[in-house]
Length: 90
Image (cartoon, rainbow, N blue to C red; front, side):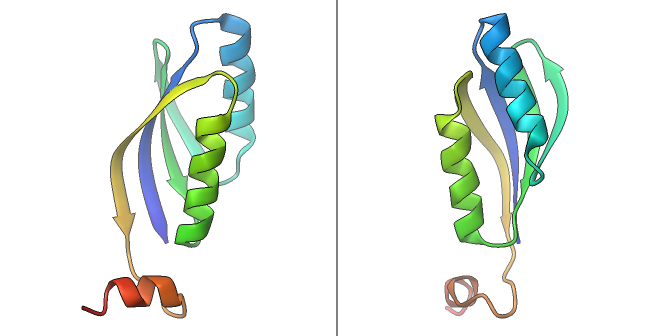
């Protein structure tokens, strides 16, 4: 289960940033922390790498999101996920 710590930078435009913040808050895999200026801390918790990638692409394409910094990622192997098992079988 990949767990990713993020800092999401929102647009300076209040309306666009507000719409982005609403969309981020509606995402069940994303837990938002405190906002500091135009940045919002978040934790993305997904069941597998492909879902993590799908959410990452969504975040980067979301109107009002200027940049997404990854500050932490944990890729623990999950039983039954061949992609994760292969990555840790060296």
